[in-house]
Length: 418
Ligand SMILES: [Zn+2]
Image 1 (cartoon, rainbow, N blue to C red):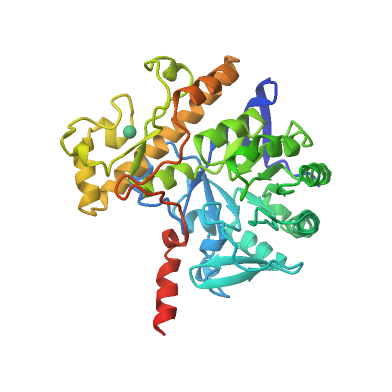
Image 2: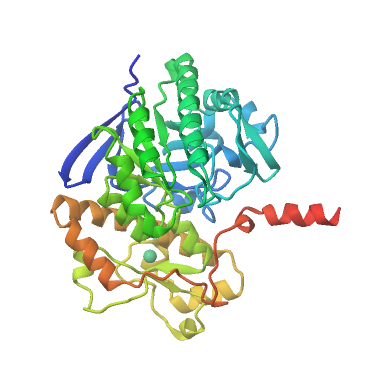
């Protein structure tokens, strides 16, 4: 039986990049594409509570089962009213996958029977039965089927082939299980694997497209930035045009642009969180807005609020921004002071600004596609900005996201003490 819970309409299409609308029939809500989901950590948008969220453009929220399955019998499974109510996102759409796209590090092996996840209660295994049980109880608006993802860049062909095969086997199993839950009408987005092997990417896309799924997830996690273009294309070239494609591992603005240029419609939105954790605020612009900027090259994409030179800068981060931090306005000096004082309000203001600005970036990309200016605008962006990794202004070193952001270091420390 076909699942008609979502429909996807392309409004404009030039070359590989496209402008579309993903419509959720039951909720009567539309997501404009290309767009970003909002990342959550343990069922919460980091640093923000409902009052902050209501001021932000948040429509489609990404949740990871990994953040909930810390026990064999998770407490959230006892809650009878679904995940929307449980995490207080009743007005938003919820996209549910198993693993967290930010914290994608090798943990333990997957086998044909289960995939391993890294919960704050330790490593656990998710079987197809566990997956179906979670979906039955949580009732999200979209669900990703199980993926045997590879994090090792040097993985051999044999491992990549096994990842493609295993993911297809799980997809067939997951689809059978979702059929049993057909009265819930939950659309399934299927992972497209293949890692660093272009041939396997094409095979994975072709075989996945033969299944009755409502969307695809092009998995780019673990790949180097310079590999992205060709590998995204190897997947999207073999997918039908009339279904949406989510891109994983395409977080930075440059990766988002490469994704859009190769036909990706939705992104995980983790960049807003990543830069906030570094004490940074998005300052880059795109399209029409960038044209108004002064002609120059190698400009930074974000500013570090840890920078002590901002201690006497009594102006907001961005006078044109409509977020709470900028429109109130809070000065850079004040936010700098808040970060130094380890005051919670600092990351709250930054997270709000960064979610607002990432959404604006996506809106500018959509406009650029509508005007058939995307190629030129992307070139202008690449020329105008520096593409070095943002560094942490306080310590002047690269502050990569790692297990520490999830509190896993606390557990390890405790284990050491024992
Ligand atoms: Zn702002």
